[in-house]
Length: 114
Length: 115
Image (cartoon, rainbow over all chains, first blue to last red):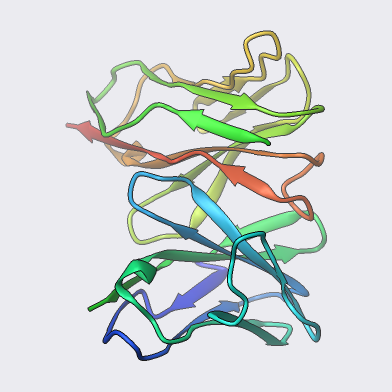
């Protein structure tokens, strides 16, 4: 069964609104989580590293004010896409680090901005 | 910078056919190499890995050998099953495991197996 759960799996939102995606580690505490996005026929690209209790570390070129990451507890990290636009439509997937050396991925979330 | 290139899909095979999914990489230093698999409706799972040149990773009948001379890590399976239908991602990290180091993924190859 899944050890990392993402919600929602699919979401459609209107342009200009914000949408939040949750990533939960179900059976373990994760001090570090990672957020990726994937455009069609392209690689999974790391967006940011989320550390519990501190600010996320964003990759170069990722707008931190647009993609807000909150890792408020050891089992939950959230990604909020603010003022979403159609070009933000993508597949977003998170992963959580367990016991320092194993990564578990979520199922991913499809975002469509209309 | 580091990058991973894998063959585009979709790949459609009949059950019991031989499978090869090509993967090549560009990296400085000595990366670790991975194959991840994503079954329909599930998260990415680590399928196999190799941490140094000439290492062979294997799992569930799949194999891949870390070839430094050709910078490749091709995925193979001698006889595929319908249950192998999934998306396969080749990846690398600049650490010795898939944890604290950043993982760089290929674009993924969708595999469909016909009964």
